[in-house]
Amino acid sequence: MRGIQATSRVEFQASLGVFGKGVEFDSISRELKLQPSHSHRAGDPGLTRRPYPQDLWLLESPLPASEAFDAHLGWLRDALAPHYQFLRTLREKYEVRSYCGISSEGVRCQFRVSPDALRIFVDLGIAMNLTVIFVGGPECGASSDTAGTGRAQSPGSTVSLEFVGEASDVGEVSRELGPVAAHAREAGASGEWETRQGRGCWSVAAPASREEGPDAQLVWLAAELFPYASFLKSVVSRVEPVVRWSLRTESDIIDQSLCPEGLSLLTSFGIPLELDASLLTIK
Image (spheres, rainbow, N blue to C red):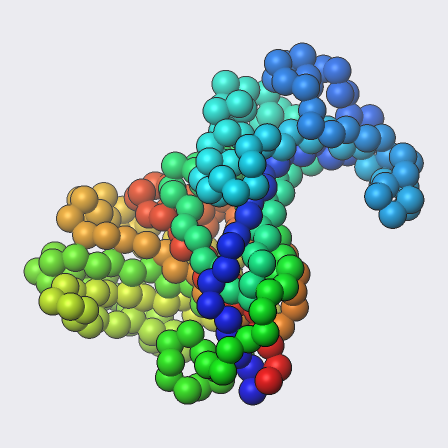
């Protein structure tokens, strides 16, 4: 039986790199007024002695890994924001790419990212490339799922948008966004209304498939919800929105990417992203 361990200590890193052929290191450092955290040329030996295939100019957050993910992204944003236009022009010649590393000592990690921290990806028009590494921990407990339902978990990913607040406000969300929930149900996903400890909760999940993954799910939500932009801007001050990304895997290393088109849903309406990643183990 597969099982999931409780949340453990999580560490973070974040960086932005310029990849390509003939990358002009000195010019980039001069324009950004920053020295790279690391740089190499194509053909230089890598960590495994295999030569690097491309040049790389890399800037990494210097904050301790124990600092929150928001803090690392915020450091990059503050360092690079005055030079966004220059970085956009670099994309015409080179590949500008992010790397976000998440390390969990156990087999489950949970964290939340603010929309302000995510804005760097939208403003630069680049994806948030995320690697989650489960580096071990105690043996999994007896529970086979996080909810205590007794149902074994299976690999996959779900992305859903949730609003919590006063029942009257959440009821307004349910009425206005009812067509989105209907579309989700037609596609095999869900749109739900419930009461939690006297408060209303309305959620809609994006249609999921193992072939497309969470990026396509977030883009689906964005395409469905942007037509309701005026309503969303008026209601987010009265309810608590969050996009929940649940990721279940049997691999101890997960590589995922969220494109700026999907992330723009979060930055446009001030919605945080909550990731709950679980390594499924065989019992």
